[in-house]
Length: 181
Image 1 (cartoon, helix red, strand yellow):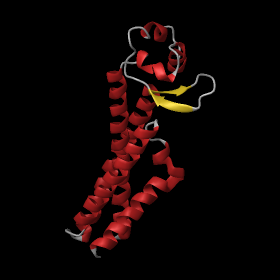
Image 2 (cartoon, rainbow, N blue to C red):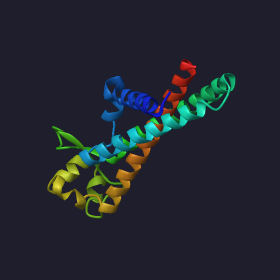
Image 3 (cartoon, helix red, strand yellow):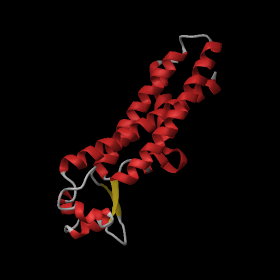
Image 4 (cartoon, one colour):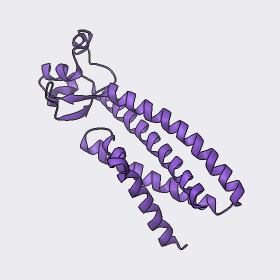
């Protein structure tokens, strides 16, 4: 297969992966437009690289060795993908909030720790959305969480998301190679 056909096939597989299951991988990306676009975009490119790397590797070994390798890799990646998916979902629930309170319209990235003035409100068990509302709304969320804390939360979410996407993509591609060979 020539380079162009390999690249076309790879792009089709990655596009399918991100569109499959109702666009699940796009739908669970970290919230906020720029962060979501970045996460899905970089995840797509990295998944494409993983697919091409795995496809190139398959041409170098015998079929029996390939099947064992792919099966072992698929199993290991599925276990890591499960753990990464659960970790991402946990962190997404911990590091995001819906706003406005009562009738949420969108999700936003919170922070890893409250600012000194907001911490007493959190101790009263108010939701992050309620605390943001008490500080004047979304334009003032920097008073609820420090900018460094919010950036740390953003990086945790992006890293967890990419780890999950790459593991699920690697497991899927490994299983496709087993079925295709």
